[in-house]
Length: 213
Ligand code: TYD
Image 1 (cartoon, rainbow, N blue to C red):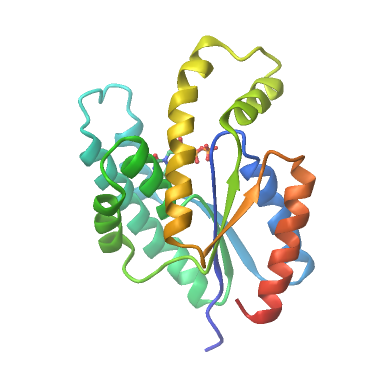
Image 2: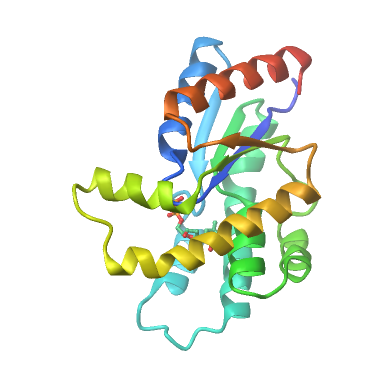
């Protein structure tokens, strides 16, 4: 059996350019003839999709924040078992749009459950599997929201502005998580034009691939 693939995750707030960058990383891996898989939770996995639909059901206004965090962890565990682990074992490089850091930040910090508490349940959900490398696209929420508004050809509305405080919390949360994992997480200034972010990512990938991560 050959070597396990590399596990790369992408994190960032709204309007950070995560989706665009994801395509660029895929193109890089393709050019390098590195077999890869791009995925995101729940990733079309039936059990994980069902769990996520419970979280997202608008009728579930009574859902407790802890329940939500546990469901995210459960969905993650299933996606890992059915998609990520088998692919890594086959030697594919797996690129996942959001992973455990999203829970640490959104549930642990922004929703106030505590980063350590959310880490504890996720530790159980993911076992020893952590990303080899995580790109965090750091964008000022005002820049991010303005980009979204521009894409949708509309003004930033009241709702966006109300959510600004939440996005600020998300950014603060990511900054804490980055401090906790300085080796694993590479921070990219995503306030710049997205092609510059992509250039940085390709350069870093090139270094890491040559080093074998
Ligand atoms: P997603 O559909 O990935 O949208 P995008 O990445 O384009 O922003 O994420 C939807 C929301 O789910 C996003 O606001 C973050 C949130 N989320 C959590 O709160 N916890 C998690 O563990 C994950 C994976 C996502």
